[in-house]
Amino acid sequence: MTQTAEDIRMMAAALREARMAFEAGEVPIGAVVALGGRIIGRGHNMTEALHDVTAHAEMQAITAATQTLGAKYLRDCTLYVTVEPCLMCAGAIGWSQLGRVVWGADDPRRGYSSLVSHERPALHPQTRTERGVLGDECLTLLRSFFSARR
Image (cartoon, rainbow, N blue to C red; front, side, top):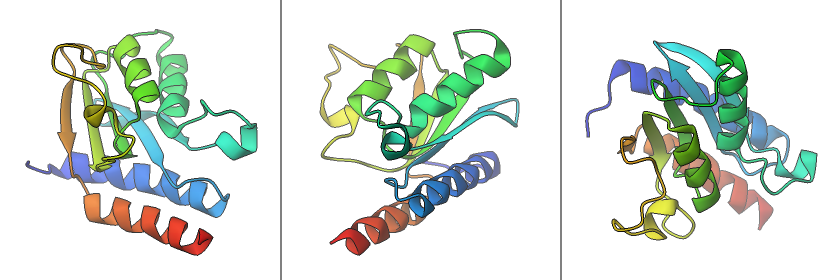
């Protein structure tokens, strides 16, 4: 996997969102949606604040991006998220037809890729994925959150 300067810059922005979640007592996952090198949607986990199990970082960022564009499809956009999306978020990514998804840390327990098969993919067939961008930083933040909780 090649980490481009753009991917690193955007994942750093997603990490800033994750740190905001951490400070708010939320699981520290952050996301941004980018188009043409510009962030058009941001989000971080807000499940505790909103009392809403669907208020994941990806959902927040996708909603913000579609509002910015005034369109429901994000074919030319890239979603950067600090942790591999869950199955629910993968479904939303598929429905929004995001062109590319980049994540930092894998989630072998709840990440969508461990829960779906090639015969039944969750993402849109044309969505490209990359993983591991700033993965160590993303995983460190997540681990520090959970170790503080124990």
